Image 1 (cartoon, helix red, strand yellow):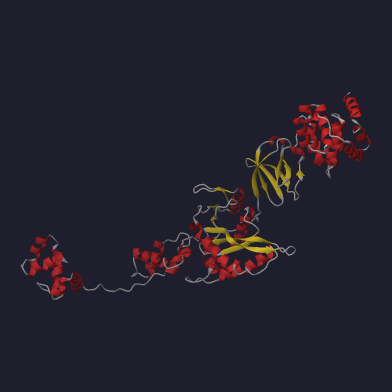
Image 2 (image 1 turned 90 degrees about the vertical axis):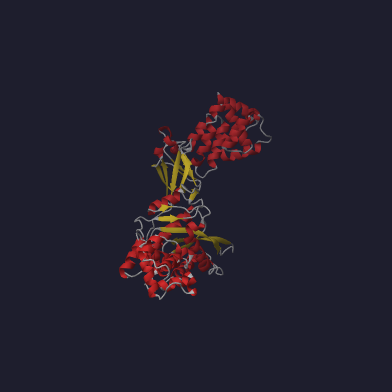
Length: 521
């Protein structure tokens, strides 16, 4: 405004021409002419009226108020939903807007209007997730009690929640715990519920999912990684103590807690299946509830946005597989899994292997190559041995009758023979006692036949019929000490079990020494 006042003063008061004013003030001649023309149009001369000392009033007098132009407003809700689709950007939506409204806003104002609108909606809905791109999963903090009809006691059931990022479409199911099987099965059921697979799943950081948390390279649990590989998805766990990384499921967990667990809090359930039926009914209502600040509901958004973008489910049905590291037993080339034993080719004894177990099979892998496969045992203590896994000299081992083990023990002494016969008789199948018997008989190599037979006699006297007891007696040197008093009572027991031969082995100490000497000869 100071420049305009000086132009008017020099032109009207001093009589300078426009050219001379332009040179004096070092401004363009066209600018001087424009300001003089505007002043004449406004009826202004020098000196200016006192009320025009205010620059704002002078500006309005010379330039007038800006013309008001009504421009069509962008549809921010439509923009927000379209941005969830793959490849859609604000620039593309602005171009479509300009084609429909040529006199509309330019790109900068268009983007500003949308961003201001985003601040008026919920935080979860403000996140920009592409359709079919991510699913978020977690377990709710609350539980639902399941009662036992007989005892009346209750066990807590945990609620698994999985939600799609773009639409917020939610799946929920109850499990007995938050173990690896629950996490894997929960995701498999969620993808079946969604009728498709996402590209990335974002879970929390529990041990069943992440064995070792790391911001950059977390170690994914092998069982969970196998599930992800089956469905062809990537696993990107949320950062530790960063709930905003999975804000979608945090909101879904809160909604599921309010609209499922809270609703069922006063009902009594006597089975997990009954409780899950009730959860399914409430889940349908949850997904059909209309949004408060946006049109539609979770189901309608899913049908419109997420469902067309999901990848198809794999043809083969998913089966949970428990994967763990183990070592092959050095002595008998077997691997222990949940209390049962499974054979491995003897060449791999002592090696670290990977066990992959489903509900029906147990497979054993070495460096990614399968070396053994067995039907999974239901009862603990069972053994599964493939004859071809044994070395050649052991392949007839399973066909040994109990008499063969007894004859081997008789070569050491009568006490050893009696002990192995008792051990085999204590088992329903004699083969189950072979391992203990072989361990005892092989002690003859480091300790000798005489000491082993004496140790077996002491074990019989104190009724400690096991490999560990005989081994401890030999290591402690107790085999040379006198036997406890009154061994005759145990002799009668052995006599009833083994007959007259065993009775002869339990005569008084003098006859026992003679029998041992005769047996040695």
